Length: 349
Ligand SMILES: [Mn+2]
Image 1 (cartoon, rainbow, N blue to C red):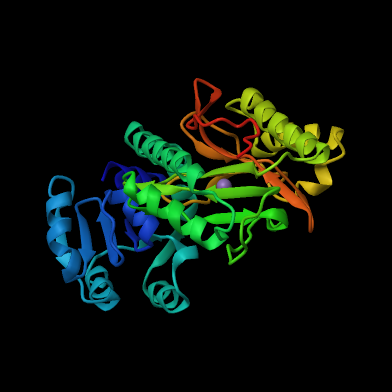
Image 2 (cartoon, helix red, strand yellow):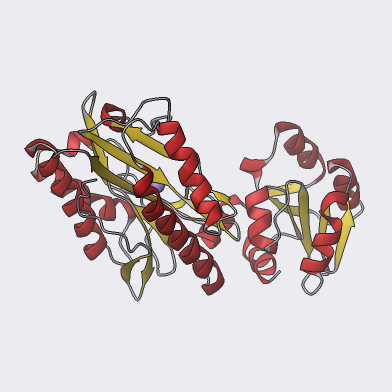
């Protein structure tokens, strides 16, 4: 509610209408697959369908002037048509074309998306607590998974079991499709887990995370299974780890995303590995697994205290192996604080 009024003032609009699920969840703290939040200077109404009405009434009773049942968008649009408003703030990028056309005919539209994206990137204490818990659970599940990694298990089984463990440890869901990549599959940064079986002498890359109160965690660990890795693997692992630690220790509030990215990228360039670092250093994390800010060569926005993002340098040798080491972190008093506690040194299983 406070967030809504703040955005309304900032956007200098007469009213604000928000339908996108993530933006709505951030405004209200209430999660639902269908709904709209309407706010003007006088009132704030939460529209949802009958499935959520009771829960919404209970959850929003102190902050909303009303919870209304809407069978579909038509009833919401009928309601706002009855209002004497000219300038309406809506997340234009999130509207369907028909929604946009309909609203555009009647109102002067202002895009609320940039204001949302910026406001959502800085987390409050409650949001940080949810993310902290989501990170703890992901790591607890990871530690429990290690004894499951035996010769013959498939990537798919591993991904599924890791997701089960996260739920068992208290997560409500996974943050995104879990990546378990064995052997040369680890060289594909977003490998889709398949029936590949674990064999001795393989790297294992696990990229996963879970949700608590709707907030995500994101972590990647690369391990070695069976026997001993060769010198090339060990040396690349050390380089990726060093680039991760350099970024963690040297990123400061006030830096641009691209300056943060450059800390890891420049170090990997000195090792002759930058051309194998094929993605950005990190991304914001919150209700969405990928959000603002971008820690990438194109990231112009300044990092701020309270932001939560990933640090995830990676090096990929096509057809051979890939190594990525990722923590979810936040900025506090100008410096990086990682949410993760598990060891980042090379683990041999
Ligand atoms: Mn990530």
